Image 1: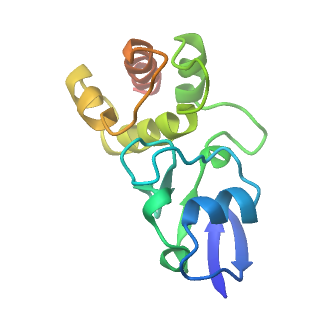
Image 2 (image 1 turned 135 degrees about the vertical axis):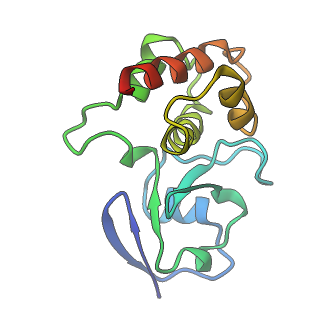
Length: 153
């Protein structure tokens, strides 16, 4: 039996040790914001925060989250649904198009801003290079992160 917390809620789940965390989150718990694309941990679509650290859930085994605290895209906004400045900036700056990579982008940017509240453009680009997007051309994503950092500062 695995015990962990996701988005502030305690879970106790029976899962095979070889089950991937992304599948546990999406299919067993119904939190479909976390997606799988590459399956090898290089595209960022499946990004989650595990004990506050950015990780790829597609290359993690379920047994690795026992006792952990996980944040998915569903846990980023306030409990009443109010968006964070980062989420609002993604909307205002057009930092998304098709939406496939957006949850992972926002999770990664959340981790960046937690570690570096006022990042430079170069720091943003370096941090976010593990999150691939085929639609936006990245300019709007960088703008969204910069805008959110300025709002919080």
